[in-house]
Image (tube, rainbow, N blue to C red; front, top):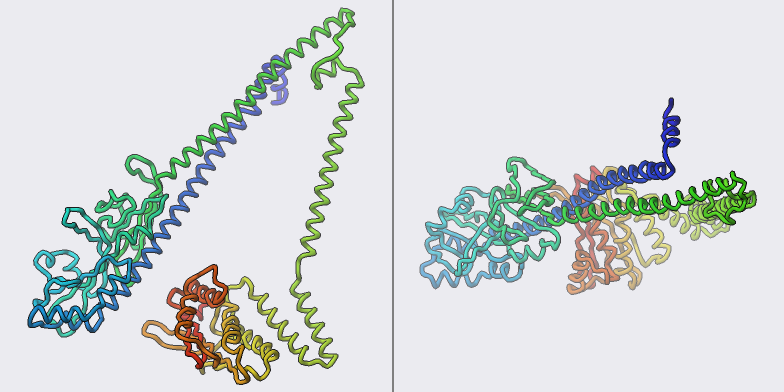
Length: 603
């Protein structure tokens, strides 16, 4: 006996009501329960991954902010440490306090940094020079300071490190700051000097704080020096950290104050320092949000089971009443009582035992009408789809068709004897081909990019004639095929030089493209200078242009091209590589593009 026969036997032994309840269980309850459990589990995983991705993104945001701030503070410390006037004060032997105060007052360097940089809450220079007393940013090292761990570490090494420091005000309130600590090198001097730059906690709060997440930050094995939750200052991180691991990373869950939460911990290696900053980002509301959504999904599943159950109960009651009526009428007919009821509720298989052929035919007609309507709707959808596909195909432009059309026009112009038009069309086709072929590509060779600029200048020569001259100078020994560059990078700069530098000039305008290298202490650079002998600009206009190149302003309509080029260079090669603009009124303008030589060889 196969499964079908067993199922048929079970139905034959059951009443219609039992059969309906059985089918409801098998067809509704079991599938909805299984599908609901699958969806709950899948949604749970998706929401967990979603909150983890958001948490990781916010952690990366904080890490980038801290890297930016610490790098800027490091650069400031470099300027302070090697300032000649500061060195003279720290190595000096002052005869009296008045001479010392006079020497300090004429050096406003430290005051300027404290006043002009909101990220700095304080700068202190500690020294054991006996002729220096506490005044402004200068502090004489006493016995209490001399035994501090950070001071001992600073005078024992030449490198920079970061330290989380705490201090108390006159009212006993404890405050915490992230501080840069470094020894100031004093040449030919028996004294020590240590520079400490405090980063403003309020500044960090305005840059780092998020309304959704809690952030806790510590340095090396130290305490938490910054936290969105002020109660965490001075405490250990939320989870144990493996400080021996160079790049410690953790993404998971933890319990904070009894609540389950998402936690992401990452490591930031500070610029030019061995110090490691550990950033812990906590999402306390993630699991609560997931739990609420799961409760809603569970409620929907229960409703999806309960409502059909109520409907099945109503239908079963209604259906069994009709069966009983049918049995009664059939019993009357078997007793030759043909006075049957005139109508019978419903239009299903039960009606077939009671209704006549007309009703059956009418049912068939209705079914055919519905099927025909469905076929018409399907054909209409197919026609609409074919129409859309045709329109999409008709809207596509084949670049080869465009090139062939330009070539046809060029040949007609050439045949007609108009060589200048033929040349212009040929140059335009080459330029369009280069643009289309490099749209969406990452890199091209420097030679191809320079050829594109040369084609562009040929087109401009057709427009301006002798009003503009073009010169290209390549440093000897440079293999242009060896270097890779971002496509469509130089032509906008050259165009900018023509539009803003040479547009209003009489004959004698000149554009020069100078490709050369420059060796620095740490690396070699490839420099591309776009030089024009145009009208130049005033210092005020030059300063505004430099600002526009660096800072995005969506309301600005000018300098957008140079801003985009500058951003492309920085994004692909690093923040230190960018556009530099040099200009003097009536002496022309030079736009310099700076690239790392080694990276350009790698592409």
